[in-house]
Image (cartoon, rainbow, N blue to C red; front, top):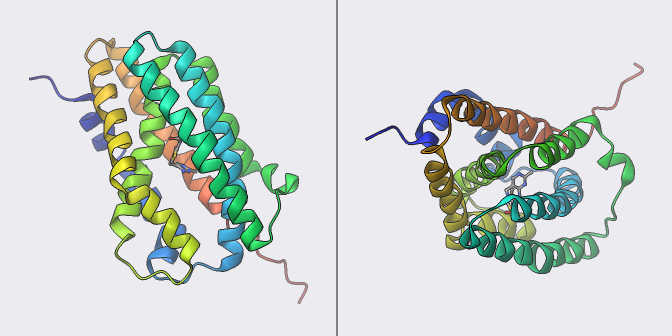
Length: 221
Ligand SMILES: Cc1ncc(C[n+]2csc(CCO)c2C)c(N)n1
């Protein structure tokens, strides 16, 4: 039997994937020492990313040719707009934080937003599934790995539990299975491109999570 495309993708991107799932953001959550100010910044950039994800899934619905894919993606869109967005609206109110345009303009945050959007806008359906697989498989991997650690901030705990939960695991596995099926009819060049896209997304994710840390103050001393 031919090699599954996602087995190859994960094997050839083992380094950037490991770098992301071992990011200091992950390590700080696992050790229950993530500064509240970092999680506040994270929620602000992450909430904005959910809006970007709505646009990405919109492109995917438009570019899909299979009605089963379209139904699944429309379900994800509904969850993003009607479950995820309210989570952020409530989180901002509870923590007394508000969207900050300067933070969204941070080059690392902008690179992630624009890079993910470019794949969806300029790429084909397989490219979009690859980028969503990259983002969701990575989240499911690290969140399920740290889910048993004690977390003092209930909002951090909720966030991790959401991405270790069976529903999110099922969505990540759906993307993996869908990409393997698409891979069977891809040309070798398209499969190579999928391998590169996955690595590109991990690198964008690493910078995105770095941007949650406030820049170090420059000491005059
Ligand atoms: C920065 C960042 N990267 C990946 C995910 C994982 N994730 C969870 S829901 C979703 C999109 C819709 O399914 C994605 C990509 C995230 N939350 N934030």
